Length: 129
Image (tube, rainbow, N blue to C red; front, side, top):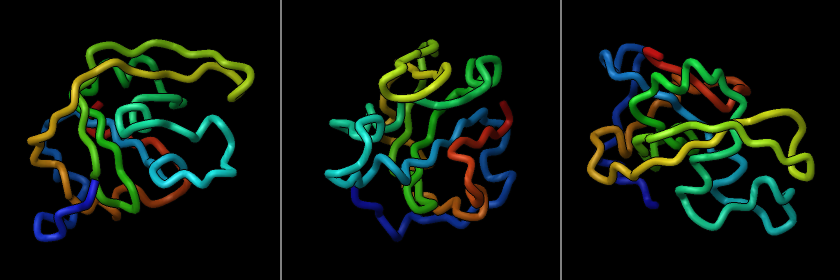
């Protein structure tokens, strides 16, 4: 998805108000190189955003939305219906989580630049969860 730069908002920690949001960074899956490990190769945006995250099972259950972020900009928003554990020794070690949900294509969050909130190495950030 191309980002609509005129809608980009520079975010602060309170920008989500009381909305419970899980932000996932798509740096390794959004534009995946052909020689990337299989775990990062995903056919579409939904698959890129929904799985394989090391998260707190309790906290993700409280999330109203999952925001997929690439280079600090929100490129996808989903409303999760259910979270479940995933184990696949071929792709990763330990248990990770995935969700089933619906896209929110008219979300006000789309296009937001939340770079200040997603600094650092962690691919997951919780807000109000």
